[in-house]
Image (cartoon, rainbow, N blue to C red; front, side, top):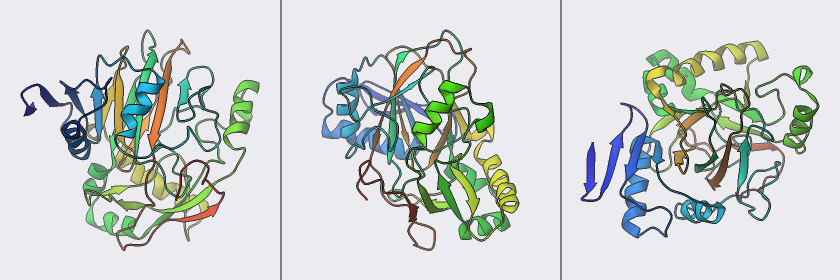
Length: 300
């Protein structure tokens, strides 16, 4: 355990990713030193867990706003009524999340950070897995790392994501239609440099569909190879949800996965995201928007 102050602690959850913070009342406005501690811990551990923090939508939005400007809930999916920054993530109405992804990478400047707050917890299962993409990059053999440094990937919301279209029921088909009601495509570097820490991480996940200059089959094989490093068990923290819990993760250098292992029993989280910057490659080139205008979601 790393002690930051007498009443505030940061307890590491795994060697590479994840920490639990205690001693800060996140239901109230944070002090400057609280924000500094949390920001430093987020850079160090990538994903942070806060327990015993009953937050309504207003409280979650207040907490997230300490770390930057908030995005709207989502580029295409409706927000919680009366809370334009809050996206419901539940077992009834959400898009399937049973795949590894980084939030909203199909726009030019994906979120800086995501917060999730538990409102209804499944009686079993329903965890969230979060992976450290910087550790994955460091794990790459040198020849593969040099290749990854040169690659660019097209990210889009218009693909099967977790379930192929012909396997969707009517309700899921409607959710997909909403999710893809505006199509976005963006070209991002496969290796992204973190704008604050300088760390390099693999910037892929479920919205990355193909690699620039390569065929579909070549892209699929290389993406699968690189993703295997992201999802190594030693690079992953498994968050078991409890009532009144908040999780904050750095969306620029993590991926996450919500396994469908709770038999569709009631489960509801609310997500609020902080606006991010345009990704930059190891050579200093910035991402490029190919299709779709997401200015209503987050200013670029």
